[in-house]
Image 1 (tube, helix red, strand yellow):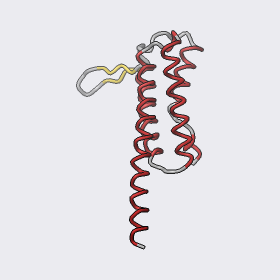
Image 2 (cartoon, rainbow, N blue to C red; image 1 turned 135 degrees about the vertical axis):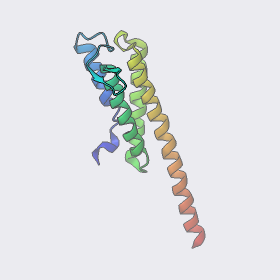
Image 3 (cartoon, rainbow, N blue to C red; image 1 turned 60 degrees about the horizontal axis):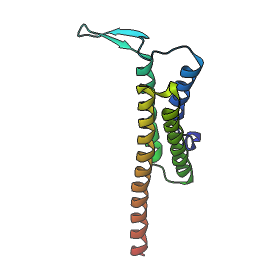
Length: 138
């Protein structure tokens, strides 16, 4: 699978930057569409909602990728950490990135880095325990 060494959270990061720097959209809270709910309320969907939903789904895929063990997983974690640092620097230094939407993308990236390393370490511990049991049995 080719996506193993590629941090998927770069996709919402790139979409945010394309919208923030290439379009005159300043309001992430404008309504894109509205959905009438069964309760009679109206749910207004914004670009912010769409982007954060995409990022949440990609974060789930990142956790699924973290369960694999191998050199590609290590490279994926390193690239995710580099992406997190880049996003954090952009959040702190770039005016267009000083929004709640971008802050949540930075938090998702942080969770990806920490969760990925944690899942990988836990998986490696289990593999080590299984290998130790095999050696003791022989």
